[in-house]
Amino acid sequence: MSKLDYRNDPKQREGILTVRKDAPFNAEPIPTDLIKNYITPEEYFFCRNHGPLPDLKEEEHDIHLQGLGTFEDKTYTLNVQELKNNFKKESVMMVMQCAGNRRDGLHKVKHTKGVIWGPCALGNAIYSGCRLKDVLESIGVTSKIKNLGKLHVAFESVEKCEEDSCYGSSIPLSKALDEFGDVLLAYEMNYRPLTRDHGYPIRVVVPGYIGGRSVKYLKSITIQDFESTSFYQRRDYKILPGHITEEKEAEAYWCKVPSIGEYNVQSYVCSPADGTHNGPQLKQVVEGYALSGGGRSIQRVDVSGDDGKSWVTAELHQPCADGSSAKVYGWCLWAAIIPTKRNVRIVSRAVDSAGNVQQEYPVWNYRGVMNNSWRTVDTTEVANL
Image (tube, rainbow, N blue to C red; front, side, top):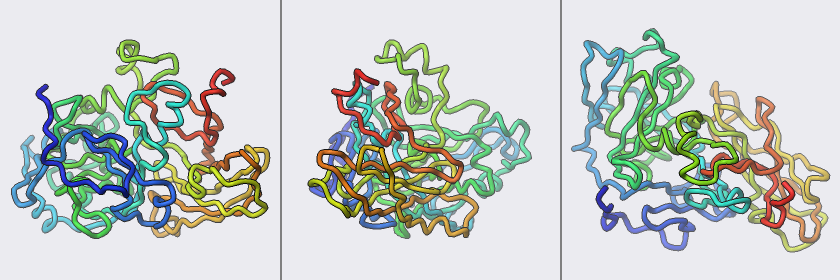
């Protein structure tokens, strides 16, 4: 593959985001900035890219739709203006979270492959656009399609990438056609047009799933009876067995391990940042975030200042769970007042509406994905795991 050219990338936000990789540009905010707002403004929103940012013009960009179930097996072409004019505009609040969020915690256990993200590779936004369900139904693809449970909807991007010719991914067709799946072809983020960093002029938004399924710079949608063949679906974003420590060993397992869809229950202490404080206090104010995948809300967040020996229940701020929607895709911000001990890091532990609880210790995997442990393990502790 020819060397990728990053010279046309936009000028990045110097000093606001912590850059984890320059080319492609990957960056995240600091923890205290992340939780300043319930709806994350773009200036504090993480950036995840796999190659140079496409420089597209909305009026010249088309999306091609094709595959199983379409009327007369035709290929359809729609532009962004047609999506805006011909389909009802819907909005969904959701957390966009990279599967590698908190990879640094696993990297401390053992070397992982990927951008070494801290705890802020996520953000809570309101995306607006048309429902993918509506668009698919307009070309003949409905929930009455034969073998629905075995079908997939694959997305391809204009974005050229390091590991593949372009970025691609897929989700089950049943998710796309679910009345409450809320999958969008989005053209706005927080009621403003998407920017290049976040997929302008059109992107897929898959609530409750890892960010890697929400394909930016969308160019094609295909209904098929197999998952996307993209590198990012078949050879990435999977939790490999713990004994796999290098690429050569992974070869035999990529085809055996399922692709990640929904993310797991998660929380983190953002203030004081990373739970690190200045010394013992009787009333330390602690704040952070919590979330869960699949449309599950947060039921409880526990906070500890004595290494998990005792816990205080946090106050939750979760307006997305007010009952107005069948599923909850936004995050929960929380606060607690706890006693702390010298040299003991503050930790948090979330429970979601299905009773899922964060794990105590990191579950290491080669790609460093889905780390949701409430305990951060230092390298000196690894031998005892």
